[in-house]
Structures are given as structure tokens and as C-alpha cells.
Image (cartoon, rainbow, N blue to C red; front, side, top):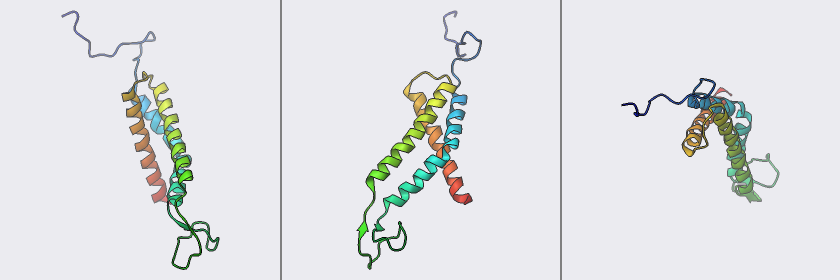
Length: 133
């Protein structure tokens, strides 16, 4: 059977494998850990701006609306959208770094795998940051 497909990945001219998905996943997770201040702050800001607050200026900027509140504001949707876009930008940067480090071809399955790794790393790091404080 000389024409049977080989289970070994093809080698590039330098002798190493052309794809390194484990290195790509590790790079994606590492970049997401480095971007923790950005997406962690964004998560807190989105949660705070999602609720309704007292706009009278008494009791602080995030005072909850009560029965004696003079004016209340609802969720700040433009801020939530801006924060979501910033978090997606963080994920895009991390996935791009993983694609380059892992020498992965531009396929949706690779981007999906690295996106899952990046989101999982962000969830773990943000949870640890909240629990440690």
C-alpha cells in the first residue's frame, strides 16, 4: 500500500511540524491572562451599567433606585455595547496571537478552538480575580 495516507503531519522545510495547535492554545490563553485588566474591568463596568441607578447624584454614582428616588436611569446600553466590543477585541487579539504561534491555517475550526481556549482562560482568570479580592 504505497499510496495510503500517513497519520503523521507533513513537515515544513525546517523539519518541524507545520501546525502546532497546543502552542496556539497556550499562546491564546496566555494573551488572555495578560489582558485580564482590560476584560476584567470591562466585565465589572458592564455589570454595573446594566442595572438601574439613581440619577439624582446623592449617594454615589451607582446608588440603586428606591421608592424615594427622584430620578432613575435604566441600563446604559451604549456602554454595555462598547464594553462587549472591547472584550471581543481582546479575544480577537488573543486568537490572532494563537494562530500565528501555532502556525495554524486560517480555518474556522482553528479560530473556534482558540476562541474556546481564550474564553475559558478569561472566565477562570476573572473568577480567580474576583474570589481573591
